[in-house]
Amino acid sequence: MLIRTGTDIRSSEVTDRSLWLDRRRFLALGAAGALALSGVPAHAASLSTVRGKFAADEPLTPMKDVTTYTNFYELGTDKSDPAQLAPSYFTKVKPWSVAVEGECAKPATLGYEDLIKPHQLEERIYRMRCVEAWSMVIPWVGVPLGDILRRFEPSSKAKYVVFTTLQDPERLPGQRRAILDWPYVEALRMDEAMHPLTLLAVGLYGEELLPQNGAPIRLVVPWKYGFKGIKSIVGIRFTETPPRTAWMKAAAREYGFYANVNPAVDHPRWSQASERRIGEFLKRKTLPFNGYAEQVASLYSGMDLAVNY
Ligand SMILES: Nc1nc2c(c(=O)[nH]1)N[C@H]1C(S)=C(S)[C@@H](COP(=O)(O)O)O[C@H]1N2
Ligand SMILES: [Mo]
Image 1 (cartoon, rainbow, N blue to C red):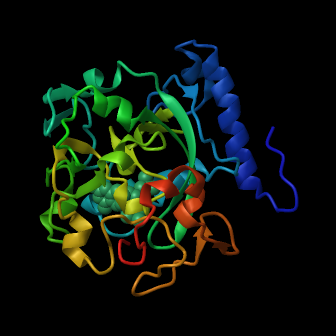
Image 2: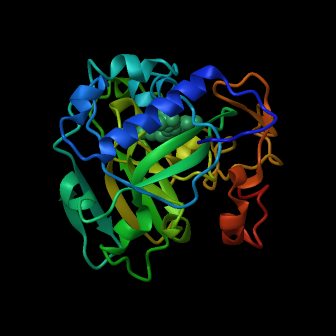
């Protein structure tokens, strides 16, 4: 039972969360047929998970908002576009493979199963904050990225990890227009990638990711702005030097490499001091490192975060 005091719980949140908890109990029975009986549309397969670390104790953003209010420019630039276009275009996400290359002893191209199956899936409830000053609380399902990366034995030259999204204008029609320099590229410093909070997500709300949320594999870095969370990853490369990410190429002054959530450093065109939690009316204060300072601030000690934004 979620107990809160002093705040108004919207009924939609309560409904959404309790439905989800009921459903999890149902799935915990382990019956494959449970899904069919539960009346939940079988649009995505359910996943078996264990409760992971760092669970934010805040009301979850309803699944409907998480899956329909999205940024995925390969499927349109309006928040509602990806959910609307995905069912016509981005339907096939399996088979899927990821090429892992660069500064490592064991480069390999692995299918989704070989990449993910050796690991126990965890549920991680994270606060997420978009650079556009809206936020959500999302129950992700995934594997700590570090556990996966270690299997490829990165060398001492591996200082960064670079991720690439699928390039396929048939399935991702937004790539037919030069909105960004496709494919979308994002990167983390090695210590950020290996941090236990960093997740390679394959699902949310106990189900496989829907295409609009970056199926079948996407990055989740809860102390950074949402654009670091690259979707539908097909490439992972260990490098000695930092790459220019897709957003740095588009507007380096607005979107830095670090992109740590920082209420003290405004975006050139708007304040970052507060945010709108999707589903809430009043704005709330944005927290340094999105509330994860205790876990990650030490990664940046000695750095001027106004310069390294
Ligand atoms: N390939 C790709 N990944 C992307 C984006 C994108 O446009 N293309 N948008 C980013 C931004 S700005 C945000 S806020 C998050 C949104 O993730 P969500 O829709 O699952 O909440 O995805 C990020 N990952
Ligand atoms: Mo974002």
